[in-house]
Image 1: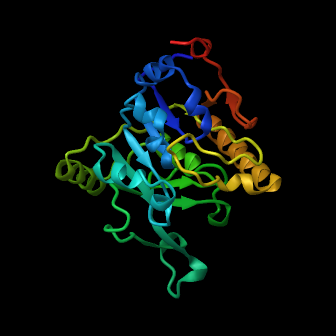
Image 2: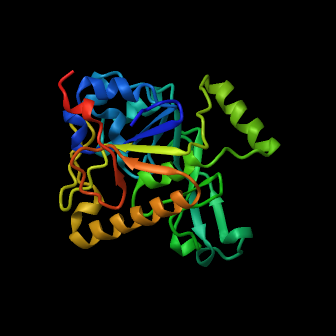
Length: 262
């Protein structure tokens, strides 16, 4: 597979990152966007190879992720990359007066969860299975990788207020607005091995939630299957570049050159 400007590479924090050769990171540098999922940007491998991330995505920065990945806090606060995290959403059943769409959206305290973009997480309870076409939403399905994949494959909102807002944020914080609307998503470090929730060195000593039981792993894998099917229905190609991944719900693509020592 050729990694070029048409591809968004989404780097998850699986332990397979530790074994990738220099050639892999060199190839990844040619992507149109390089996205860090949760603690991936803090992984020793990413820091050693000076990966220049376009976007940092972490839905749980306001819910203890910094404590689980200690190096992430300083990276998050100092990065030149665009940052995306979750917005606080109360469902219709949880609010006394329903808003349009059945959601009361309340941005988090910026002091606790500073970011440039806040993404609304949606799933089947919101009537969304596998994919949202709303530019401010992402299908969660049990993985930040799904949320940000959905979000970056959708185009930015084209309304005048949204354009002005993100341009103002970019100017004030001296950041580049990341490209969106990708038709090709390539995942890396998406190991998803059953009962093995380890992370790459430096990306956290905690275990990923999917590893707490085989049933949980199965449910997340099925969510990935739905996500990929819905992406394909929209003309979006989703592939997994992770060597020896445990996820069979996503088309696997091997890069022979990466098996050679660079």
